[in-house]
Image (tube, rainbow, N blue to C red; front, side, top):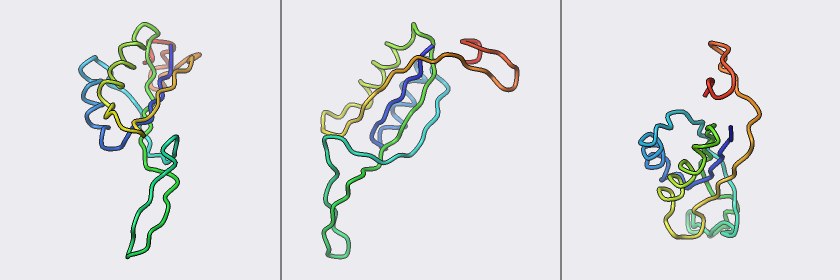
Length: 112
């Protein structure tokens, strides 16, 4: 099993969620996060004053999948979340040792 963590632009969440549902990924955790990479933030104007915003709003998706589904999930996220502009995000893939469904006690891939 693997845990896929994708950090994407907030306006792409619904589109990515729908694309993942089409490949039968129906469970994920979504968190609103802030961060920066090569973008280094951006300048905003508020009440006539300009100021630098270092941390930009992003959304973090966490998805646990079987090893054989990782490539399809990553390809779906990339093709759906990509705008071609700086700040599109990143995807991290980590090994997932185990999973337990609390309600039933199922473990491993059965818990997914």
